[in-house]
Image (cartoon, rainbow, N blue to C red; front, top):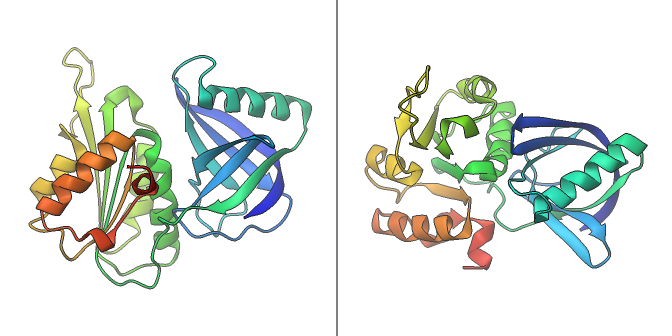
Amino acid sequence: MKTVSCQIQSLSSLTPHVYKVLLKPSEKIDFIAGQYLNFVMSDEDKRPFSIASSPNSDLIELQIGAFVADSYPMQVIECIKASFDSGEAVTIEIPAGNAQLRTESERPLLLLAGGTGFSYIKSMFEYLSEQNSQRHIMVYWGLREESAVYELEKTIATIAKLPHASFIPVVENINEKSQNPWQGRTGLVHQAAINDIVSFEAYDIYLAGRFEMVGAIRSDFVEHGALLEHMYADAFAYI
């Protein structure tokens, strides 16, 4: 990994609890879609975040979910806010991770994420779109509730550029009293994939989300034909 200084290009809110950070590195960065970086708080405190941008982008995008004040991610957001206000640089270590896109493969792709795990698969489908990939690609994004959805139209437009790709957002809990109730798929996101795909045996599968979620999906997908040697997730190193 390289240690790189970055300026904060922008900090914005995607939802009340999810922040979008754009970093401008001091030098050209090489990474593979699906890798992550470490945000350096101190020499002893380095915090991992998936890279949400394509490797072709001049800026590095992070999508950070911070749901509790003074939480692990909110401390990073506060550090970023302070650096943005002062104009001081932040430090990252990049790249990290072994669950990156296998670019040499021509197998069909299943990209599935829950919540802000979306940043992991976003880097991949943006890169594939730029490459005009001809692979068959299924992209699933699961969210607890409709209010957690962000940049939906942008995602639809990006994936629509791929000739053999489908995007399926899935909301678990529906607010029946909403003035504009969710019109898309509902329930558990991995169950939606199981319902749609006869067998996962042919697929390269990339997963991101809470560790317990990824562990449960791995077991269910193997029962549905998935091959462990073609399943990838950073969480697999910990579960």
